[in-house]
Image (cartoon, one colour):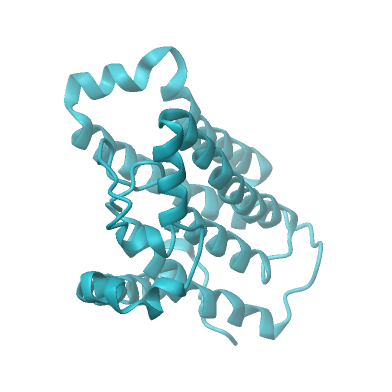
Length: 231
């Protein structure tokens, strides 16, 4: 199975894995059966596996060039990905329940927003950054569909999740949540009070993100089959 058939199948399974569990309460049934942590651990492994297959399948699809890969374009993902991985590290277990990677059931305290003051959607920003940065050097049709779709979906998810938070909260709580957080703001990084509460954890998260980036950088060729380094 090669070419567009494999790519279409990988894309369909990846998209289906994200939407089918929501139909008919299947996800809630599975969570009740195996527990929330076990469900999301298994779901995460499956999602990562399908994503890797989808990226590999895009590379095997017939090459339909929309724009050429110029030498400088390879620098774009290499510059963007350290920041994306830092956002992933900061977003994992975020004390903000209305986003991807946030702690489900967490009672958000607007007086101590943590990293949500910098971004309440770091995972979505990381996904958009990953997709957008990889779109630049990959100008063939299969990769444009792949990375373009991820970028658009990640950016579209931000207002969708914000709307979900507003529906779930009383008006005053929703306003407090909105005022104490941001889609993206560097202002908290200049706030001494915020830094006093968060600097140590931020440093650990940044280090984790950079180590994750280095690991993915050197595993990229073995897993994806393409060297990420500029030529």
